[in-house]
Length: 232
Image (cartoon, rainbow, N blue to C red; front, side, top):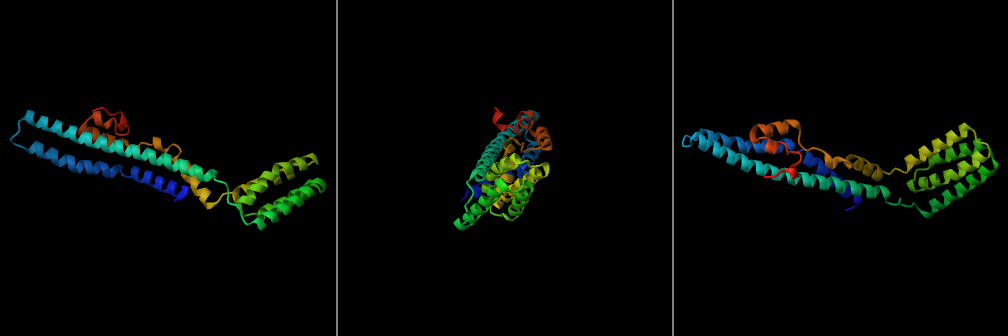
């Protein structure tokens, strides 16, 4: 699998874990409530016996839920980190080179533009650079052209370039910057941004916490989003 595929898979897993909160609470309710009802309806138990059985049920279900919360919190954090690291790897990967002929043609065109920047008017040169940048679509060539812009800017500036020409070069830079963004890098950037601080995200909402508090008490509900701090 590629770095991008691994990043996407990890990110999707993290999102899947986030989406389980409602179903986990409902599953808890489906198990807890019938057992609690059975205890309360048991005529063979005294009030003290019922309270003892209820506390045993709370302890059993509380531990079960904390174990689940810990497992999911750990897995969620791992998936967020993996997605973020792998996405970052895609963003820093060297750009794939086009055919050598394309590189040679670009180098020839840039050499001509550099020579013109020594002799022609800044406006004429900046306009030609803008026209050429508009047809550059290959990410690698766009990167190479961006690297050449500071030198061209210095030459034009030394020859009295006006604000208009400087603005034109700025437009050229923005055009080329867009051309460097491949679909893969765009996807990687989206995943990188989405997972940068996602491992700190609470998996459960206040309503889930309140639900748990009413049934198990604050010992468990207070740690619903920080299960690693739970002490049995």
